Length: 95
Image (tube, rainbow, N blue to C red):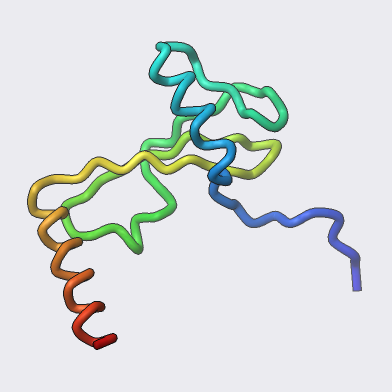
């Protein structure tokens, strides 16, 4: 069996890397990967669509060499309502 040198799965940026990317965006700069320094590419859809509540949309900023992404989610009032209902149902089932 062939040995895999590195993982080919996409991962979200860690909590340590996210603030630096968001700071670059807030400053109006084109964001770069905090790990390897390459420019982040915009993807029109997000990899998290399966877990987003109904009505929410999103896009990704991705670093292809590191295979990491930052999901940017845009909520609507309806999607926030569904998110709150989902959290309430989870709290009720735990209790």
